Image (tube, rainbow, N blue to C red; front, side, top):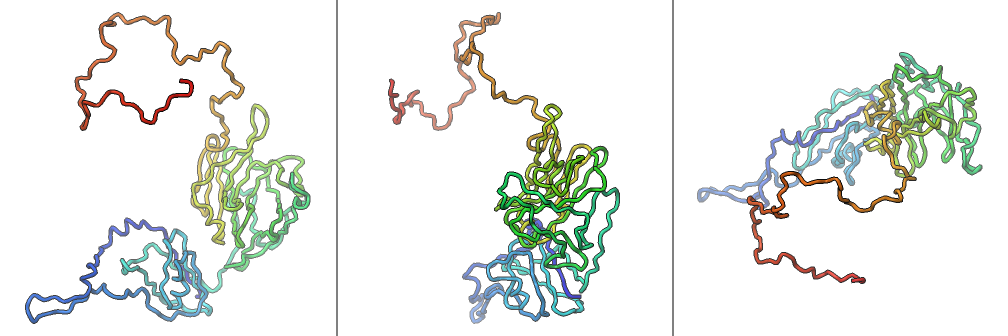
Length: 422
């Protein structure tokens, strides 16, 4: 065995603390002192919490390459803890965080010791963790799709057979940068590669890339859900670009070697980033039954932090599910991040509101600007009493506490000024 992972799942900290017995420290002047109830029986006392806290115990570990997804605080790194130089202090772990140790030489792992805690709670324990001891070599087998599959590609065969590289230019762009001349390749991952597992790789920086392939047969939206999913790994990071896919609209004149940004598509799905704007697109083109024109319908932005999926250099699985009942759901790593109705939760909505503002509407020439007008047909009720005053006293009213009886009903505003045209 040559490596081990320790995974930390997100915990409910407050609930965990409720089950702990917390022993409070005495005050500063009670740490060290003397005490006696009888003369000649003076005892020297020292609180056991007084003095230097032992936060780590140095111990030898086998030579290894180590890494963690936990963010270290200041100098208290995982490396220093593993080398017995200091303790490891990290920010709060989240689900999926890990600590990885890859031994330089093969070892037989019989047991391991992992000590955790802090100054206030030195006996804290990490619960809900998984320890995986992985073999020196992982056997990889190309996955075989099951069920009714319209398209599947693993790239494990190592070639671009069946794929068409675009030979055209991007629309409305300067000729110098308009060409889709970015290079493609099929290679394994740069880090943590598994023998036999390969993927499609963009080889060129700051270049337009476009590649396409035909599905086995057109998909008809009827009784079955449509599932689109693929993996993405930004192993070198990304500044401005996308890793999204488009499901092109079927047509008799479709030429994949002329595929470019204006080629008609039905669905667009996948991650996209520029600067600090992190997106996960789901767009479909809808044809208006009235005008016959197509309009893009955008799903609302998922209410999750997308940045980590672009920066952690891990492989992530993106999934889009379209259901026959006209609902959709989006997953990242099999965790739902967005769901809604294709009719109501897209922008702009497929079904427009029943009433909309008419930008060309104007008031009639005989429009009466008065907010209230008398009703010529109104009449007083039969029991109308002309002698009742306009205001009557509330017999249940009570003066507020602190009411000033001698205060005038009206007081002048010291900041008031006469209008210019007074």
